[in-house]
Amino acid sequence: MSVGGRHILLGICGSIAAYKSAHLTRLLVKAGAHVQVVMTPDATQFITPLTLATLSGNPVLVDYFAAKSGEWNNHVQLALDADAILIAPASANTLAKFANGLCDNLLCAVYLSAKSPVFLAPAMDLDMWAHDSTRSNISRLQSYGNHIIPPGNGELASGLSGEGRLAEPEEIFATLQVYFGEGLPLAGKKALVSAGPTHESIDPVRYIGNHSTGKMGYAIANQLLRLGADVTLVSGPSGLTPPERATFIPVTSAAEMLEACRSHFPMADITVMSAAVADYTPKVTADQKIKKTESHLTLELVKTTDILATLGKAKRNDQILVGFALETQDEVANAVDKLHRKNLDFIVLNSMRDAGAGFASDSNKVTIIDKNDDKEVFELKSKGEVAKDICSRVIRLLNR
Ligand code: CTP
Image 1 (cartoon, rainbow, N blue to C red):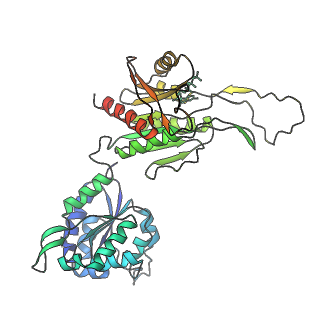
Image 2 (image 1 turned 45 degrees about the horizontal axis):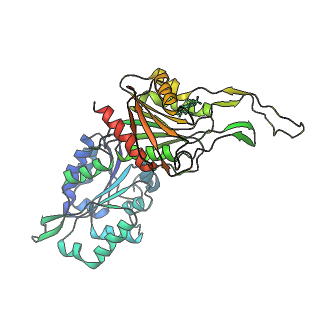
Image 3 (image 1 turned 45 degrees about the vertical axis):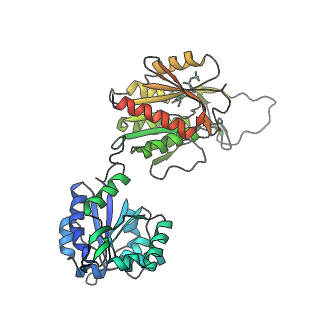
């Protein structure tokens, strides 16, 4: 993930610091971001829309509609299109409006419609910044989940000196870089994770499933995201909330999971298959509910395609492929066999024999076995901590 390719909605308020927005726009555009500038009417007194339109390469929006053409600037769509909304400079007046949900101009309406993270870079005179009203507005805005990029300390336009000057454009840009994962160990890496059980339909109301909850896979997806990777999570029915920043692909059956994984695998630098995929599926799925007319019912099952082995065959040298093994006997020997048979970089073995490990539990006890058959045995840990161990091993392999 990086700022490049992102849609950044840059809101500019009426403040002398608005001149710095030109430089900020330039930094964003140079990094490959798509910048849409929305100005408050007062901001246009400080810097011309023409300057920002030229630098951003996009028309600058100020009003709800263009008076001449009658064209409507759809605030809801503008908010939806943005990967991040950045208000720089954010004036005391606009912060107060945001804190209270006022929307008497286009920028305020975009803010109220925001679905993406909002970054606020305040700029004002030191006494305005220190005022109790501003302090309380800032705390309120933070409590709503907005990110505040604190103002710097120094010379102000009023001639006074103190806290209130807009953070430097480089600093504001760096905040977005960190948010989008640049500088993190897995920045720029694409990861594919499978999680959860699969459900194989017997008839319209019944299926064959297993007890997997998806907790381990979701913990891995979350950890990869934290480390800066761009994550695609392919999940069977789990009931868990997908990580906000992951591309989420819900699937039901092993066949659907195979298709989703197969199509995303070529793009993935890191693939971790933690799903508990059904090994067998009904040969036929009845169109209608099966009635209990007979004393015995025999279901014919056929083998599903092994997703991990399929990916292992297609794997390039620059890709890392990690699998899981859930064993009840001859754990290590079985896991080593799977590791080599499926062409993995390492395998995570969890034994059903360990108390507190396996399906549904919040903890897990694993052994990581690598291509040289070297084993690292871990203690019983939370699934979040196990995800950290797995991701550390991935980072070690990437850096070798
Ligand atoms: N797996 C898969 N597709 C399948 C079956 C398994 O991708 N159809 C993956 C799992 O996600 C896991 C690994 O293979 O990463 C091992 O799964 P496991 O159920 O332990 O082993 P199997 O390969 O199914 O072998 P067996 O049933 O013989 O233990």
